[in-house]
Length: 63
Image (cartoon, rainbow, N blue to C red):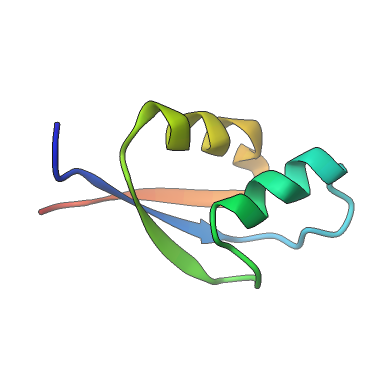
């Protein structure tokens, strides 16, 4: 559905992640712990979140 957003928050440190996982988190726009970003709810973003679910918290934004 157009207009759906995801709020993604980095809840754990990047220390100890593989380089690929770290690059995925950085590509989402997250640099610091407890930082949040909003992205459109697309299959690409969902795939990125699925690659590192143990360090992210995802919530749906109503619009």
